[in-house]
Image (tube, rainbow, N blue to C red):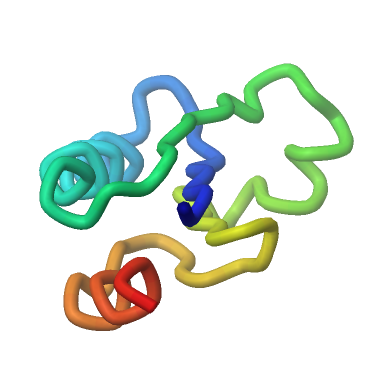
Length: 78
């Protein structure tokens, strides 16, 4: 089973859209989904601050700013 992690920020509209999309697709494509907020974590803020949401699949960066739906589905379906 794939692991999807979304690095997010509170109050980030793009993050909310990415989280909603990932949640909607989860039942159909069966992957583990978690969200980690980078607010207040200086290491994560430095790494991902301007790129959120960051979508990670199995620990590897997959998308920044938005989920490319077709590409995401292809990646979690493998």
